[in-house]
Every structure is written in C-alpha cells, then in structure tokens.
Amino acid sequence: MADNLIRIYGLLDSKAIKPNLLIYGDLSAACAKCNKIDLKLDNANCPGCNTEFKYIAFRNVKVHIPKIHKLLNEKPHIKIIDFDDYKRNEGASKAEDFLRG
Image (cartoon, rainbow, N blue to C red; front, side, top):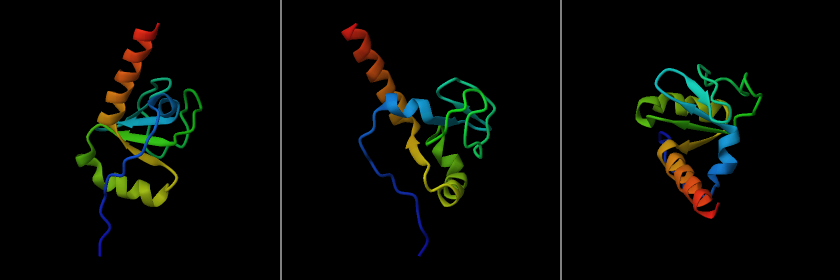
C-alpha cells in the first residue's frame, strides 16, 4: 500500500515558527526570519542569518507533492506546515499585538 500525505493538526505558535521557517514558492524559497530569497530546499540553515530551518511551508502544496515526499524521507525532523494557516495565524497574532499596544 502506498503512503499518502495526510494533514495532521497541532497547536503551534506562529511567533515560534517564524524564526525557523523556510517558505517555498514556485521556484525557490525564502527565509521567514530575514527574508533572504533564492534559497534551495536542501539548505539546512539560512545563509543570511544562519537560522536552522525546522519548518517548511509551501505556497502551492499541490504542485510540490513529489518534493514533500522526498523531504519527508530525507529530513524526517522537518515539519511541513500549511502556508495559509501560518499566514492567517500570523495576521491574527499581529492584530492582537496591535490591539494590546
């Protein structure tokens, strides 16, 4: 039987994710911490700020399913997170901070 990708939900703080997040677009990736662009998926650390990538978010998951399978096999310690969930939670967190301050 073939293994398929299934989403698993968990409680994570977007503020804790951002310093260790690699955001992958159509052709390349960017560091969420320092915004360095043109990174590769095989980068373990950001060449700009030297942060260790513990999370990866794909802007368009459906296009990158083969890459996700490869990543999960080669780097099982990396967590794949949903980009839309991340952005929504980051926006809510910014709004909360703004209303408190």
